Image (cartoon, rainbow, N blue to C red; front, side, top):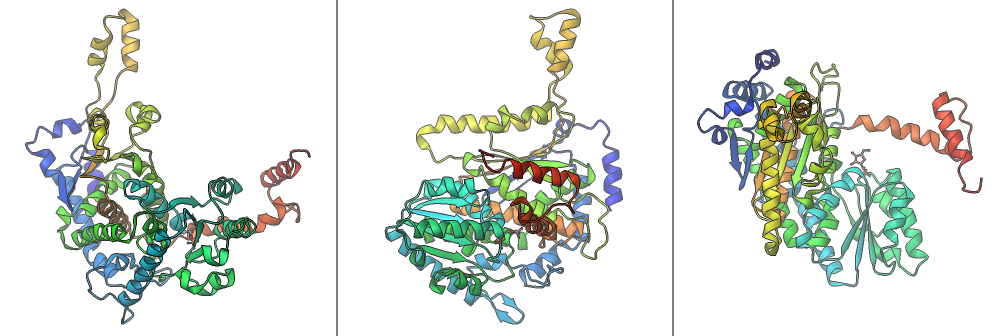
Amino acid sequence: MWEDLKLKADELGERRIVDLFKTPMRAQHFSVTACKMRFDYSKTLLDTEVTWQLLHLADAARVSSKAKAMFAGDPINETEGRAVLHTALRNTSGVPVELNGKDIMPEITETRTRMEAFAEDVRAGEITDVINIGIGGSDLGPAMAVRALAPYHDGPRCHFVSNVDGADIADTLKLCDPQSTLVIVASKTFTTIETMTNAATAKAWMKGNGGNPGLQFAAVSSSLEKTREFGIHPSRVFSFGDYVGGRYSVWGPIGLSLMLAIGPERFRQFLAGARSMDNHFREAPLAENMPVLLALVGIWHAQILGYETRAVLPYDDRLARLPAYLQQLEMESNGKRVAMDGAVVEVPTGPIVWGEPGTNGQHAFYQLIHQGSRIVPCEFLVAARGHEEDLQHHHDLLLANCFAQSEALMVGRKFKEAKAKISDYFNGVELQRQAAHRVFPGNRPSTTLIYEQLDPETLGKIIALYEHRVFVEGVILGINSFDQWGVELGKELATALGPMVSGKASAEEKDSSTQGLIDFALRHRRADA
Ligand code: F6P
């Protein structure tokens, strides 16, 4: 099947996306509407035959039955022997979710009820600022969502500290009052060195400045023992099971900072949005299934056509952290080189994901997207409606720019047109030379996801859409999207390097590059050295 698709790609030759629009109703046939959102993938080189081949690939990989297994709590994270049940965190249907014969919904609901009571309490009290200390999945989800839902904030200000670089915590603490700040230490394992270092620094800051860490610290973790050792009372600890991976955890206690910012009611709307995408993913046939189609477009671009990166371009400034969030979701999930059975995967796996909000990116890296020698499939996201009703003209410009980019990428500008544009200013050889610089090859693929407005429900839908897209791509590639062994080696080596960079141990066993870097760092450790 891969071979058929590759043959098809080889046959594309000079085919142009724009010509595919000569087929009537192309946009209708290559768009899907679900959960009040429209995903348009017509500005790609996909035609009906390729789409069917891709659907066949998904079918042969047993995407539907594997999705069923995920929702049913089978241990599909095989390398860690775990179920994958982040979807249970947003299961508000009352339907039980069984894991090893036990319904896990009562524990999930009980934790959510405790979170809600805690959030109401904090929101009604004297706390002015909340600092979420966490990293990776314990940071990116709530940080992205808190920013995305700024118009719905009516709780304390939320700050996020993730980096072990002291600059991160130092700059944040400067903004907060130690007596009216709540610190949430968010770490599934409660062992992550960055988080534990920042948590200790925050605790010392609070203690030394009249605050009360005993009352002003809360924790989100799976390890009650470790949170107790750190001194956090169990009544302020919110935990979740090992069936929820870090990068899939925003729906539960890791979302506590979001709940504090927008309130429990809106947090529930966020969950309901995700839930509606879950239902769509479970029920819609593959050919009408938005996450499946998003995944198949991804497979077509990355694995069949060999495009190495994909740009996520939200024309929605409040989604500024979405690309970073998706980098973890997609690259930590599908950046693997071996299949579930340990054999090396024969096609390239997860693509490099990057991006920035539009229109900012237009004035930075779009040059390469339009005229560079690499093709970068672009994924645009935009709301039909902004929140700033009195600034409608801004939103109109935003929409116009978003749609203009996908059109420009597709249509391009031919040499003849470029020449005509500047023929009043240049002639002869100079006209030829100048026109060459103004040619846009076009035929560059993009997709657009358009939704009504970025409210809590819609954000939930968008995130769940991408989660399921990652799942489908992982199933088709035959890899385990739910482990992350690739982050371990660096952690081990950092632990060994710690004493060397502080001058307490010799670095002589290290390679000469590492030795040279350590030597430079040690010599410049102090400004007066
Ligand atoms: O190092 C990678 C990772 O394990 C991520 O998968 C995870 O989201 C992050 O670290 C943080 O882990 P924890 O929540 O246990 O501190």
